[in-house]
Length: 247
Image (cartoon, rainbow, N blue to C red):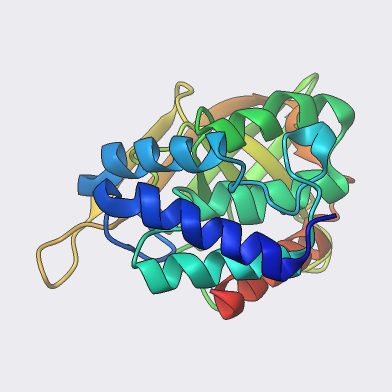
């Protein structure tokens, strides 16, 4: 395996050659105005082997360590360019599926996420459940081989340009609030999904609110076990904190 120092030198040289026309470093969330440039940059990064640095090789990664990934994040910060286009996809969704996803879910989503074909948003926060996600009210009710989703999410970053989301929804309304929640991969362009930009005081709209009205998703979109979404979400958000702290 290449050492962290050798890898960092390689990354430094690649960025020195390739970053002159990259978009500015926009942090964890790509603004809507930079989506096209951000996605083009991400695809160059992935083609060079810097998108899934510590993902397993069998899922399109390089099979390196989190320390190698941290070295890439550092070099990108020094160069002033984004390390990836879609943090929700590579860090949150990727981390959840690598750990808890079925073989079919991994095959469907992981390589496509690295390639930038599947772009992800996070469907967690709600008007009455922001800092306390255990209070979420969006429901996913089982109906044969489908779950029917109804509810609302807010502060969704990238909802307008994402084709997939990771969704936390209540699947057992009788259970204690942290015990009746499940975790899903969610197609964003199904009938019954409405996405509205959230205007900020500055006049910009970096976030969205998302409404679900009788949206039917396949039961196989459940990640992990039914009603075990709270544990999955804690692990997933832990991946986010690690990524942000090393970036």
